[in-house]
Image 1 (spheres, rainbow over the protein chains, first blue to last red):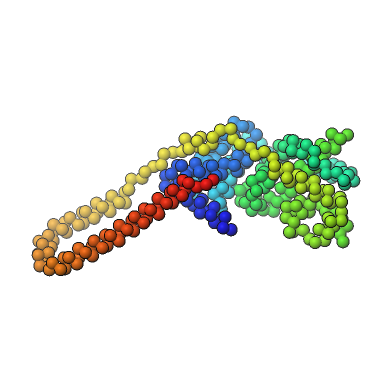
Image 2: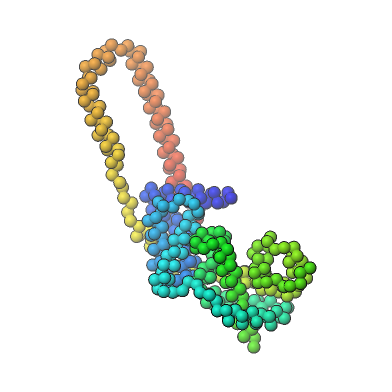
Length: 197
Length: 151
């Protein structure tokens, strides 16, 4: 609670300084929120060149609209929202898919496979080559799932903060994150089993 | 005791939000090797995602953005100028018109009254100066705090 207050106090100081013409303070805002923007652009945008343009666009929009920031959330959450919407707009423009339904057939096959696998109770299958496999499998997820997983697990954001950033209901965020984890687990098990055969 | 294994959703909750899991499910986990293996698998997955290398831009976003920021516009202080002009326009004719009366008042006023008035004015000015210095120091402190903010 106290941390949140401190953070909002420093957010307030930074925003006031920027609004009073201190550009250096805006540099501090960028440094403070850069990690979040990097995560989101990397997870939602596949083209490295476009990421650069989008990241700049995010901060220029934030600067332009800073007077409209009413401290109803953390400054980082607000900039996260801008980043998410900018990426979303880019995907729409390029007619790329943020999220589609997982194939039902694929899920049934995985469930069937899991039943067989449950007999291997002594194995903790994820132990081997997990990081390399995970990296590949995370990249194969849809942009929204990749983003949600990263925000939750790597940026340690709460479901509420993620919901604020993405404007999705908190329950939907939870459900998507659960599905993304399950997909990751199932796909890794599937690949592991295939390599065993 | 519950005999059915934990679902994927329950296993994820067991790791992420253990306080939401019922005691019956917890007892089942203690006695079920299958569920414990599934939990261990998910735990590895959670840790694996958390430990993934964090992406970084290969350019300095701060400099790139700061270069593009528009120069802050210094707005012309219209309000101050208007008030000043209005005050001068109001006071000057009054002063010219009433000068002879004012002169007479000053001549008739005792030295003690003039001294009291001047002292009161000086005291008020001192208080205002102290207040201004305090405000200035406060603002300076606030700016320094922003600049030395630990990120």
